[in-house]
Image (cartoon, rainbow, N blue to C red; front, side, top):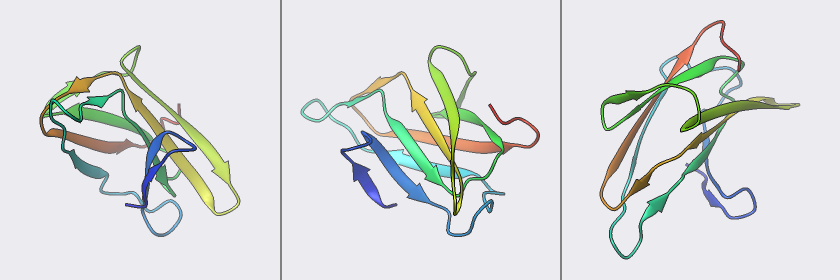
Length: 104
């Protein structure tokens, strides 16, 4: 994790080498009544061109109005940008898995 980037309003994570996201990503975000989690966004650096599937606390969330993604091309590789419409006041587990052949 590269931490939260206030300029992008997103959590920035790095996979290391370009296009090397074969196993996906698992994240846990803590939240409580004094510090709720609202509509988180993630930038997964060097994810590659693959799309992604999402599970929140083990429940699949299909792409649509509550789960959006896109890619940002850089000289170093392609980043995956994920936005999730959700609110939490307790631990939230997020699982992202690459989908080959699906880019956006």
